[in-house]
Image 1 (cartoon, rainbow, N blue to C red):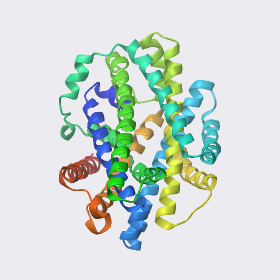
Image 2 (image 1 turned 135 degrees about the horizontal axis):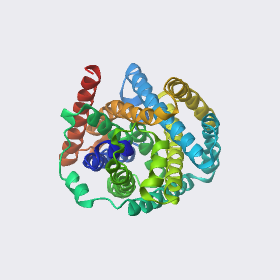
Image 3 (image 1 turned 60 degrees about the vertical axis):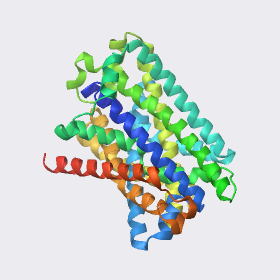
Length: 386
């Protein structure tokens, strides 16, 4: 999504990457507050405080978000395997299902091993992108100008569509459920002062993690804007294979396209891990149905493969990039179904006690939810009136 934004609009949507990351920090800190105050993750809290029909509906929307993420992970990883090893696309799709074995092995070692593995993947991504950005020599003055200006989303439906994809890919509704569960793997006391201290450290974790994610996402957009947009590639359909080939010519480095494919593979694996763990949290929290991780992974993968395969058979592999962006827009459309319950629960004194959110934090998160609802409305209107 970030690559598509850079290719089509240069640096214009860089401010959306930054703002969506700031939104994610506030929202994720709210998830940490919920977990520390109640001892429940978001899915468990929704089941406890909403009726069965409402909880069931929220569970369905969370599963849609997870399946959308899985479609993106299937496509991204399969394309990366094809670019690196020339594996046929269908073989790559099958191999992506085997990552559950790695997930199971790391889970048996403890959650810190999973954290370390994902951090290692992101370090590889950062190195790969950093090397390519040095070669691309971006126009930093244009980038900073884009940061200081608001993109005309209301006047450009395609720009709005990509901006919503960036928001969905950054905040990711199922990660709200996952983060509220992960926080509880930390040790903290039961007194209010101890809980507030735990919340402070959890917020620091969020800022560091999402700050790093911001650097990666911004780097992708800047790389595309510098290496591809100025070459007139904005008119070319978004295709990861084309981007891979163009980078070799534009950056004049045989290593650049390989690093691009490696970064794509690492992103796919990281997404796979979080989607697998989020799926377990969502299913256990909403319907109290605990199944083995491999069964959960296989069922989600089968659901995701059907629309992905049907799309590619009809449109061709060169349209995979368009489907990737569409999955992230789906995530943005699902966000309110996680954010509104999260905000509603966290502002309740009856549920949260002295840890309820208030003051400037409540005002900011409320504004974030309002902005996202407005953007979703604008997107739906633009899609229906095309």
